[in-house]
Image (cartoon, rainbow, N blue to C red; front, side, top):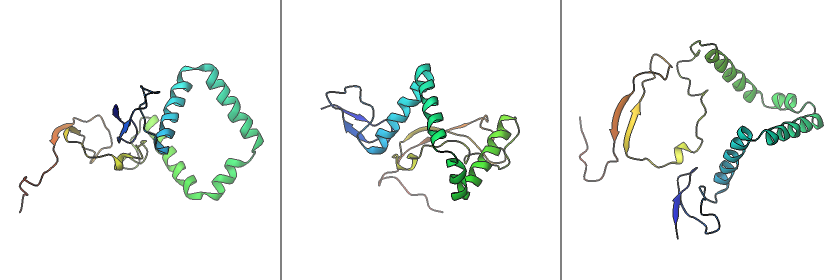
Length: 155
């Protein structure tokens, strides 16, 4: 039985014989990620699909007037956070520095990042103190997992 690492969660899974090109495990979140990836690619490459999706969204919006207004009224924290993030995106689009020193709250993140195991190897460290611009000279460092035989540094 062939095993493969899940593209989404990083766990090992057995590839089914009926789907030899399988890239995601059967976990619900991983299948949702697989579908989202497929849909993103389909929207980018298939004009008919893109038009059909837009028509479906317009039909839904016409059948549910006022939905987003009600949602924003019921979720003021979401509304405020969304407005702040949009202001940051607008500032960046105009070429202005972000209002806050860290732009990590604006950038998209992998929600499962914390669940992925630590992987020893070479990493680029990009300083973010004093300026939020990512085009700075990176530092190349090697990180390895400590074992019981490694010595612990003491002050």
